[in-house]
Image 1 (cartoon, rainbow, N blue to C red):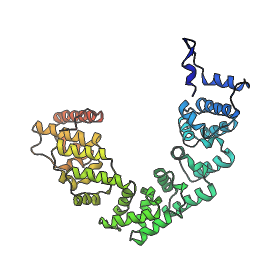
Image 2: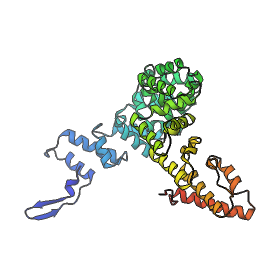
Image 3: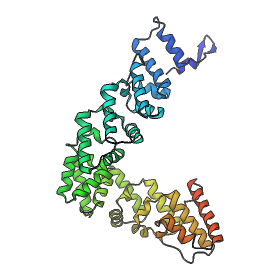
Image 4: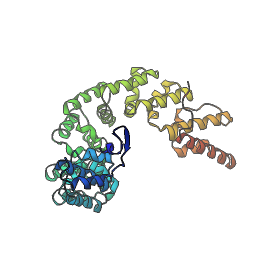
Length: 392
């Protein structure tokens, strides 16, 4: 905002370099020279920017942006808010994040607004880290009514889950849920699922595991339910709810792009839907993730693309921690003559313990030690992105 003061200014024909002013120096000059052509509101904004930088830890750019949404002439009110947050376990970084997301918190009343809400959540058994993480993710909870929104919503979920801790788990997954009107979203969508044969136990389980699904507009939610049914999902199984979550989490164009990625890998529409029914999260991964896994398994490891249709959860495996290091390690075993034949895709799905038992510890001690070292090298190289995973 004040960078022009440090630039070169033309004076006649000779450029003069002006020493840059620090923000607090300039603020002092402006506040103590009423003859300067700056309004009170400008002074107030400068004070706010300075306070946000020096006291709250915001960057000058962020402070300048935030100052357009909140302002104050003295530090008394924001000081009380910051002191309250610090006393309740919030770090300076967390406080800066909260202010960046909801600047108005600095104008909030500690006694009337902040204290009652923090006290309520503590009374329900939330941990210190859980409390700070919740409000860092969604500080807007602090601006909604405790009696009209937070308490009724919390009690509704607590009665449904039969657990206060489960409510905090759902809030962690969807921190904004208390900003919604449950009567306008959760209850209508709950009824839609019941009418379509979804068991109550699966609805409750879904609200705990994928809560965001239940806060879609009921009309859109109903359409998605019909689409999932047409794909052949059984409403009696929990995969129906997961598929509903995946479908509702993306736009139609994103869904179609991911569909096209699988088609380009050699899968037919029928095979894609078959894989989706077996593993609904298949469509939740990014296009880059899908391409990377398919490329490695097909072009580097030599598996047929259609085999992956039967093992769709492979798409969800970590490239760096599992697929790439295991793939190259087993290639090395084959080149050393330690494997007589090419193994199937199951080798990527078994646990780490079983993998080591099957391909490392099954050898005598000296050989096992050598192979363990080799495997760890593959893990480290894959983690650092130093193993070639492309093959043209």
